[in-house]
Image (tube, rainbow, N blue to C red; front, side, top):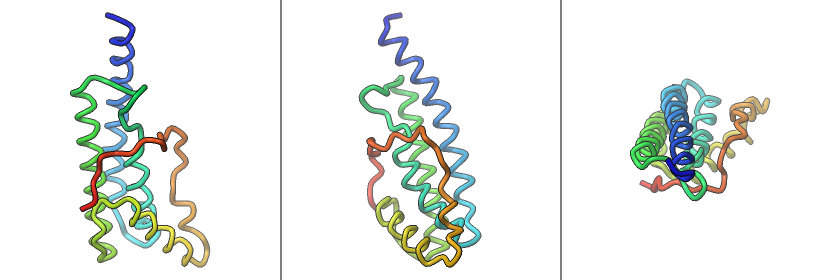
Length: 135
């Protein structure tokens, strides 16, 4: 196996782990019961959309990357469906609109409790942009 092949294999192992995380967040963050959990879910739509997106320097086997991107889309869609039910808004998978909504809601919270809703996950690849489209 060549060095690029070994690197792709190693990245593939990591991408499988990322896929499992995305699946768990899709279930967990779709459970919206109040404004605080809705704000967190809206923030997670943006977070998930940029979390370890395959690209230059982060390439795994094609089938692993396809599964990762499929799970990313499914998790975002699941959270968005819950957000839309809870809020009555129809923003689809538009990350910017959900982020703006979350920021507006956080600023209106009297005790700032919603500011604690975003997890601290340093491994986010914020320079990547996913192909999740606006609906």
